[in-house]
Length: 435
Image 1 (cartoon, rainbow, N blue to C red):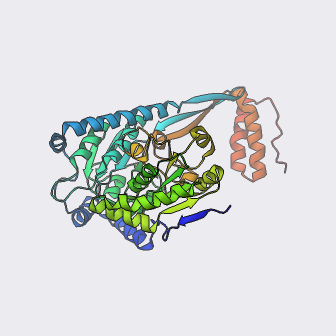
Image 2 (cartoon, rainbow, N blue to C red):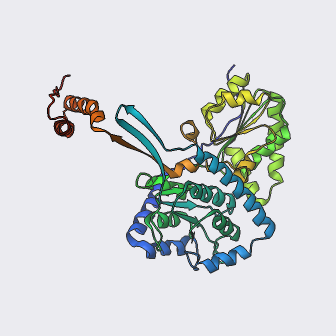
Image 3 (cartoon, rainbow, N blue to C red):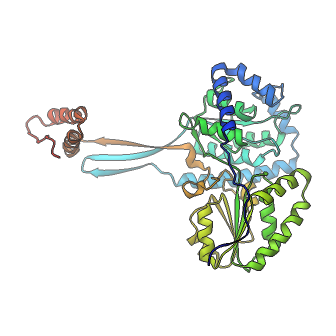
């Protein structure tokens, strides 16, 4: 049967509005040209902070002293989990070499980028977890210098818990600067910092657009839009748990899509009745965000069976995908497009967002159809190398010379010719192009 939309989104999340692009492009260009002074000018305008932008060790220590011991323990717990998983991921990346033909050896090496810039949001919410996720993975990858950058509060600076998290996870520098100016400062090596080779971490539409514009001259984790989440649920699911999970993700922002896909109409209707009640019980700002996201971007879809549910999910390619259904192994084997997968009622996106150990910087807006999220691998360059004996190079040189001449690239062919002539002066070779 055709999918039945009990609730259809009125809007589609967009992160590349022309006015945002133009604004960000102007700011980046002015900061690149004006350096520290221009970055500070924008910081005064947008951050409204007049303290040190590059935190001193004394300032870091003072901020850390403000963090309650229980919160420190929770941050250390999450950091240990993220580090443990990142180390397991890094172990899958090994240097290899193989003999292609006798006498010709080719290999690969995994080399970390030199400097990483980690953006940690600090607007509506101070993202402690983002500091953990981005800095820890860069540290495990082996980046030589890690910059953590977070928007300061006008009077208080960077949130102390964010400072503590960035510090224990391995940040070499902490930059009290937000928005486009913070991204630019990391990229252009302002305030005595090294120029970041990669920029990672979530942020608002201006931060996302800055990364989009800079991509190519610098690496990025991904081009991100508003966070999104999809729940797959069958008749075995608890409607209250499903509704709570949807609301928990809708509170991210007014344009954060959440979707329910099910083969049980009664479950769908019960969840739709529960969500407004749960939203109404949230604190003010959270309630405002969740209400708008549910009203304008949420969808509830009834499918005929679990295969159609899985196909629907793969088409949406959600950032976060939760399965609250029977036969979890079937879903694990069948589903192919998601940023991170949460199997069973016993786990939830919130766990992955904060403390499970997998990363919460994930592809949005359908990008999970072609990429995964932030990991140790994003900071690593896979480079290749090769070595040959003179005898081993002979068949390679012959093939190179002839293919190059067919292509019309005579200079390439002669690079092979000169070696054949030097290494095998008494032999004659047919190096003519045919084709």
